[in-house]
Image (tube, rainbow, N blue to C red; front, side, top):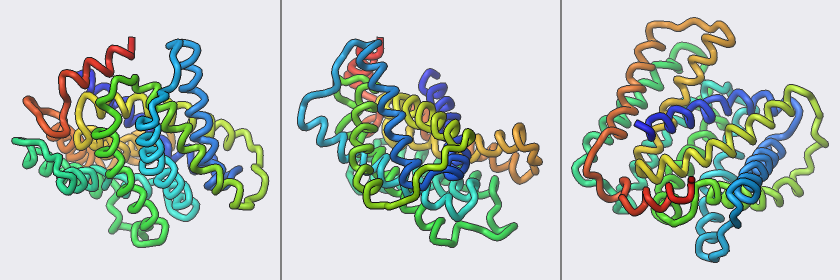
Length: 309
């Protein structure tokens, strides 16, 4: 139940990121948005680690090696691709393409040989149902679709990187005796370092300091990056990589709710049907017992939780 609540909170944080990215792009370039997003998130989490938890970041070279790889797979590459894509496509299109992430995660799980015994049928069924729900929500066949475009391809590649990152973090980082806050701070800091060269060679014009763009960037860094990655590591630790990645199916649902409540967009029967399928698809892979492989382990849970108090 607690993990389901974390998935919901994570969906709220990440589900609004496409909106914040679109607003932030009014004053900054794609590389600038992505770099400062990492910087704000890392700084926020570092303050928590140093001032509240009174701890230091990991010093083990192996941990930092895995953090750098995770930063590339889960942050620097996909976040930059999503941001670049949103310069030319709609936020809704980016959202629906990002919902393919669990499918990439499941594929990576199979290729990596980390399938969970006794629940692959449930997982595959839930992932397929959730994806069909996302398609119904946005109904790309009704209007001119951004999916078959360069921006759509960039989002698809980004989703594939995210899918691989879930399995990688589950295998090499989530089961270590390091708190999610520390892991997240280190990973976002590493992502900032990886993006710094792109910032230097981009030769983009100086940021245009618009209030709306700066506020969007601040929210994107604090909630959509810093807080979200703490939740992300915790969800992976408790639920495994595939179950954790289904949060991506909730992102279109969040977008629909925000559109209806903030922008006054109508809720069509197709949208309601798609939302119902998404919720069913999320419930199937995340409800299970006796999981092995990429699922939760008692030692993993206790190790992570001991650092959270």
